[in-house]
Length: 511
Image 1: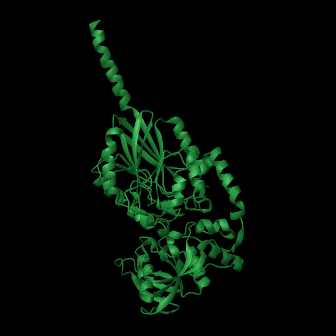
Image 2 (image 1 turned 120 degrees about the horizontal axis):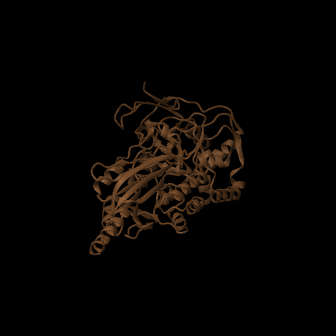
Image 3 (image 1 turned 90 degrees about the vertical axis):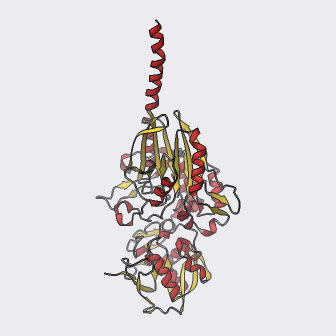
């Protein structure tokens, strides 16, 4: 009898230990969704199968929730952009996230596309926490949003911190964040990890940082445009105690979780646009991760029945806005496509339109401002809003030939994609050091004069120094009126039919 009594506590302890060892945590994650409500044709794959779509993605998420315990869903920012986002100031996206039951999100630069005051309203309407630990009201230590949250499911507690990087801040619309300051996230995360560690089982950081990602839906098929995630590695090396780091902004798909060799932090990220669902499964022994596995799950649209509630909300917004987005503006005989790191037909087209609308010598627009191709056939205003979704107006700058060369050199650095141009021909050599890649420049068919002043039509975002085009800040500027999307729509209305592709051979790589 005594022996039986003495063995019982041991059995109980062993049972508790086994239970602790088998605790399951599944982290699902998205980033850089960019209003990809509908499935996207994967034209880089045979047969162009469709990927993604908010309703299909939701069905996939709910299937995983039904079969696994301890499932958390996070996003690392840049939900906004696109026609439904533009016309609802982001409301449609926040409604979608609420229905999908996100547990938390970090703030991306595009959440400020319609101003910081607007996003403050949007994040206060949803039940899940929106995190930005290093964003403060200008000149104060008062935070713009929550720095972290603690979430508990099935007995597992996660401390979740959200941050935005300095690079991401640099591509936010300058006029949208005039009342905010952005601080270095590393010391802030370090302090929050220390504060949270004793109270939780795992520390998760949701981060929108690193280099700006390529604005191409086929990025997973274009390794040459893929960004690194060095900034994520640096932060997780300098800050110990982070268990999982979910990245964003770079659109860098990490097919299998990367393990920081110094700290053991698991780093993950998707390609964006909702074509992949990030999946990370962890097994815990107490607070220690004893095993992990993860992958980027392809969201094959045809394999999933669309979630009814998401489909209903999407239909509601489309019907509500149909009078505004279904109006045919004109016809294109050829599809106009984007390319982030070289001259593109869409970039040439937009730059031509800006130059013609203002009778300028040169037209310039940033590759990152082109967010969707324009289809061949009838083009609606909704198509134009998708391609040019930002609140950017037409601006004319007086620039010297020397300043135009500086802008081109910034484009040839590929830090923010290659500048798209009209009215000039530039030869460049990417094998040369950054800042020395321009080989020759002609404007209007003549060798560019460094001292001559030229009229350059562009958009207000880069005129304000966005995408690192600081040269524009030193120029005399005139507001030419109208959003870029409106200027392009007016052009299509006047032309009715655009028969041919814009003339190519403006940005010529050295052989």
